[in-house]
Figure 1 (spheres, rainbow, N blue to C red):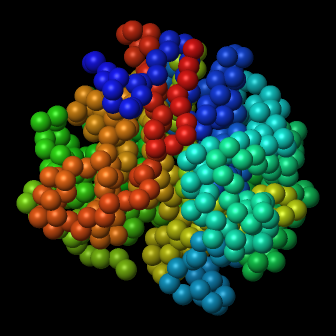
Figure 2 (figure 1 turned 90 degrees about the vertical axis):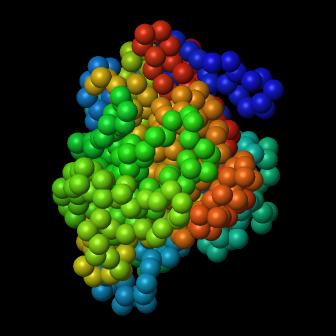
Figure 3 (figure 1 turned 45 degrees about the horizontal axis):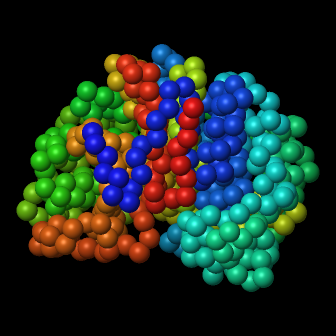
Length: 530
């Protein structure tokens, strides 16, 4: 494939031994440093995400959650659920008694489930890491204590969330120095976060979930009205655990995702629906966007009605990916008209970072870490420097709903790592950031790559669309002719002012001993290898 060097885009990155792709240059550089020093894919992923928790604080942090898919060379894909649970005292009744009615607001202390990221990092490291945490956290600690330059996309998103951050005095003091978001190139530091990373490096997960640090976090959350206890945090130390991934064929490949409570199942439903249509390169732009939109609406409708804590979802993946369900859903799509979604059996029910790594041994990891909304809950504990996520806002306050908040329940999650396999072997860790968009983004990216035969980086850079909330969001790159045709079919179009998501991937071409990497141009990051 000939690359158009006048396109103002960049080509995919090529290397032969090892590669990492992230959405931040300092994060990619940290992971590459570990790979170059002989560390493995898990080591590099932990080093990279630790840096990103410092330099991209509105997207991720140690006060968030994590999911991962790990594929040792020639081995089966493993899934790690590092999502946190609600406090033991959390019930629908308790939250309604506290004054909540229809939903849990982003900035409410009840939006803070017990963070799962550090439990996940330490589980991954204990089972598959090779270098000590002290070595893996070196660059992150340095940036936290000594400062780092704010990059362009981070600065844009930071400024967009400034008013929200200003609502918490402690977050405002740290993230709005001088009363304003940092500009591109400004230096920012988080010394207390550096201290937390030193503590975790020395004590492991206990350094976060037990002792003085945990007591301080609990005290702060309780001061805001939270139901959290030190016992909740202590029990969460080992909450990350390995689970069996779910998958579906797509063409001659197989796509693996983490099972519920993540929305990976939604990505697989979209792909299964799209597999019933000819998605090849000859399909028109309007038809492609229309099919993706209709499949997305159907899949997300099921997500919102049914996805929840794993205990509430037993057998759901097998049911929703069955031929009976997929044929029923695909049969509802009309090419000439946008239709409202419906559940297959008819009855109705009332911000993130991602990275991919392949190491010199051929091990691959697909890794995602998130605090959900921009700056999470915005609730910052001034004594520990921990910014808490807002994942609990995904819970419903409807008694009997599968995703209703309850003691020690995990909420439905939007963050999803992906792994593409062929002939039983992992050939590409991949992921798409962007909150709600992620499942739709997985399907669109894979279709670009596999159905249209696009280059890896080009498959990421192609204009995006997303059917959500009764409208079809489109990026400005969608042609005027396609926009007119989609409007004629009944889609309510909205041209977005900010890019839809971001993505990273590393594709393994074993036949040529080649690694092909891409990092979305919508973000600041890059893919690098050697």
